[in-house]
Structures are given as C-alpha cells and as structure tokens.
Amino acid sequence: MPIDPVPLQWPEQGVTRVPYRVYEDPAIHAREQALLFRGPTWNYLGLDCEIPRPGDYKLNFVGETPVILCRDENGEVHAMVNRCAHRGALVCIDKRGNREQLTCVYHNWSYNLRGDLTSVAFKRGVRGSGGMPADFDNARHGLERLRVASFQGIHFGTFSDATPSIEQYLGPVMSAYLKRAYGRPMKVIGAHSQYLKNNWKLVMENVRDPYHASILHLFFGSFGLSRQTMKGEALLDDTGWHHLVYTKRGTDDIRGTEYEGNKLPNMKSHLKLNDPKILEEWPEFPDGITNMVQTVFPAVTFQQISNCLGVRHIVPRGPHECEWFWTLLGYEDDEPWQTKIRARQANLIGPAGFISLEDGAVTNFVQRGIQGGNPDALAVVEMGGSHTTSGEDRVTEATIRGFWKGYREVMGL
Ligand code: FES
Ligand SMILES: [Fe+2]
Image 1 (cartoon, rainbow, N blue to C red):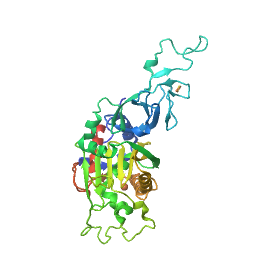
Image 2 (tube, protein in one colour):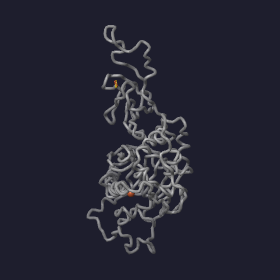
Image 3 (tube, protein in one colour):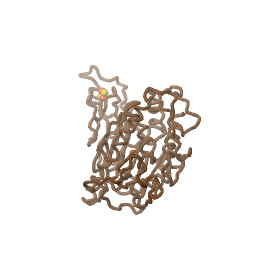
Image 4 (cartoon, protein in one colour):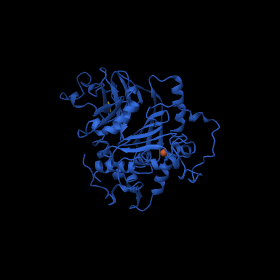
C-alpha cells in the first residue's frame, strides 16, 4: 500500500516532546493503520480461555481492522480479517460463538476455520447459465490471514512477516511478568467496553503514566491503594516499547513527602467509606505486588489492581475517538469467595469505576484542550529526565517516553 510522505517533523528534543498533532491529524491516523497496526507489531487478539473448544471464535480488531480469532477442529488457533473475499462484508457479526464454518450472510460464501474459501453459492450458475468463470479458483480467495503467536495463553496477531517471535518481541522482563499472572489456566468473570471521545494514544499514555496515579485518582491516594512512597518499580524492556509499573501496598512511609498533611490538592485522607468492603483483598502473589499495570506495545494493557485481574485493549475509531475493551479475569480453580472479591474490586475500574472514571475524563480533557490550538504546540514529557530506561522511581514519564520511542520507530517519524 503506498504511504503518504512523512506528515510530521518530530521535534528535535526527541521523546520528551509530543506534537499535539499526533492526536488529531487524519494523515497520521492513516499512517498508523498502515505502518503500526499492519507493521512489525504483535497485537492483542484474545485469551485461550475465551475460545476453549474447537469452533469457538471471538471478534476483535487490530487497529481499526476487524479480525476473527478462532480455534479450528484440530485445536489450532487462527486469525483472519473479518472481511468477506467477495464484496467485503463482515463474515461474523456476533461478537463470539461457535461455528463449524464461517458463512457470509450477503451471498453465502463460506470459509473453514482456517479462512479457506470452501463454497460459493451458485458457483456454476443455475441450469448452466450464470455463475463464476470456470477458472475461478477458491484457493485464491480465502480470508486475509494474520500470523498468530501465543504466549501464556494470550494470543497475538501480526500482519507483518518482519515481526520477530513473540518471546523476542516481549523480551525477558515483560515475559516474566506475563508468566507471573497468566501462567495458570484463567477464566473470564466479566467484560465491558467504554467508548472514549479521544485519540487512542492518549489512553496508552495514560495507562503508562505512574505520575498521575496517586494525584488524579483521589481514591488511590486517599485509601492508600497506591502511592509514590510505596515500594515499586517502573520497568521498560530493552526496546522501551513495553512497560510495567507496580507498587506494593503497605510498604510506604509518607513522612516528609507531599502526602503528609494533605499537601496534594486532590488528597482527602479524612474521607471514610460507608462500606469498606471494596477494599477487601487477599495477598495473592508471593512477590507482594498489589498494584500493577503492564502494556504490550502498541495497544494492550494487563492489569492487577489488588485481586482484580484483567486485560484492557484499546481500539482506535478514527483520529478522535476510540473504544476500550475490558476483560476481567480469575483463575479456573478460584474458590467462589475469591471470584466474589475480584468482581467486587472490579468496581474500582471501568467506565464508572472509582479509579478509572477519572482516566476516561482526563484523556478527553486533553483532546478538548488541544483543539484548534497552535499546530506546532508540544506536550512536555520530561518527568524523570529524558531516558527510556527502568528505575524504582515512579515520579517519572520514562514509561510514556518508551511508547513514543516505539511509535517513532515504526512510524518513521
Ligand atoms: S459479500 Fe460475502 S458473500 Fe458476497
Ligand atoms: Fe489512571
């Protein structure tokens, strides 16, 4: 596909500055679809536990491209573009289900679970007239396929032959932390989606931003779920593309910091919950981590907020909007009381969650704030310096700079 010439000159300060145009410009949006989502990146498709049986499928998106993730009759997992080879209609409409074959409703072309075209309605016409030309070859008209790679039951897809193996892509640190949470059979305990009126990258910056966590989120700081003073780390892989931030609840000392005496305007440590059950948790992981957000570039987040485990996947919907898909998880062998605590803690996140509602609001504040402004204006991403490397400090934006490092590399900006 021909790509437009580079639509932007990146500022000379590098990843400590972000041109606001990247959140608005349709030319940049088109370039992302072509070079980033169809480029050398592994994109989140779904979990093993979402398609456990032969014939199970789930719909997802890579960038804006609709994709089918499915398991064939031999148990192999495949991913194909959800676009009929005939005239481009969606082949699957229901978000998930079980099928022996995939049939397009428009003219009934059918595909097997590997995406091969298996039948064309009226292929030979009716009583010898009409129909496809004699040399029409089904084998040349299957669904467009993606390469699929699985890591710890998490399925990723890529359109590019240049994408390295998933292990190489993730690197050792990100792999180790995914294994920590996903190394056991999982089960889905809920799902929801959230439509956001802002560019998708504002969300990915937000989830990679440990600086805002205890400031914007009144609940985090006020009820001691996560503070900068707790032990933790902000980690990036060697490329800087992926990140991980964690904290350990109950390890902090707020003396001599802005938390002491409520110096942060947002903190309200005098607040009390009428029903503190939302804070009920149990120590789940031997490493003592109670709060963790991990991203795999470009658009997926794996989270642990106390015992609330889940995946958040962001899907662009044009330059100014996006949709966020949340999948809430537990382990297959969870006791009912554990599922109950996980589900209750899910009220912390999501569109109306005590923590996450502010994220959805503030990313929109940015979209509205940059509207119609100086086209050369730049965001400042300089907390913690200019590096894109790991550290124990979470008053940092290194994790956001890592996103822009990966972004610039794949986008050629
Ligand atoms: S568009 Fe699918 S069969 Fe015609
Ligand atoms: Fe947040």
